[in-house]
Image: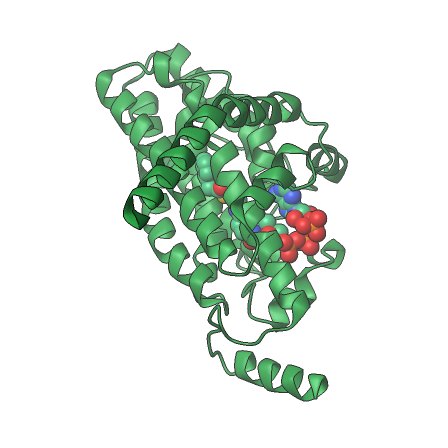
Length: 312
Ligand code: FAQ
């Protein structure tokens, strides 16, 4: 009977039907989604930290207001995503415990430091750009609560990408030579980590085959990475910056850019917890959780009081 259910599920998903929270689903499908959605939520929340580093030093009031709005959006994305994961039967406390104990992953990209103001523009342009490339196909993910959350998230990411690009354009077109050099320096540092956001090569990606079959992932890691390079290089040309890859070249036959080899040792080191800022990022999140304990306790005490009042 289990085999029959599985076959029916796979047939449904294969035809492009969506799965809702109350529908039957294979255990491994549920686990895969909790893993991916919770990692995604953690990435949004940890991703607030590198940008938060520049809120007090944004160059103008306008840039500061934009940056604060962007960081708040990211907090919101984390919340929609934790809610989507909760529909699969895992509590937010369990997910946060997994993050705080170092068991859960979050995107490698947020373990790099933001060293100058141009890093904020480059995060918008490259990091949000890569995020959109990866996340637009997730709006068609077979698990409907995740797909629905992704629609709004993608709209906001698209605004984030544009504001980043626009702020870099201003620096490149109206900036001093020093400001232009800051942009190039930021691009040099963020280019390769941005390409790593898409995950390992397809042949080294243990989860891809199953996730593609179940319609969780619609486009492979390598295909998305190629799409990102193809879309981004013309934008770099308009900006007037170069990417730090001597092997980058338009391939007229493939009609795609060829690009150099990614340093996978660095990728796995960062994913494994040993990147430039992993310890700092996790410590910041754990401290925020501990510092917030009194708020959670007060909210629970208030809820209990209201409940007793209502019962009386
Ligand atoms: N970092 O078999 P696969 C954002 C892990 S955007 C760390 O290919 P899968 C917006 C992977 O989890 C960033 N770990 O895995 C923003 C797996 O380990 P596991 C977040 C990585 O799941 C912008 C192992 O390697 N976006 O936050 C990475 O099929 C600016 C093998 O890999 C999402 O999470 C990595 N880069 O494909 C916020 C999108 N890559 O779990 C603030 C949703 C791979 O088996 C500022 N997620 N790993 O122990 C996905 O699309 C997928 O999960 C992939 C990985 C494509 C990330």
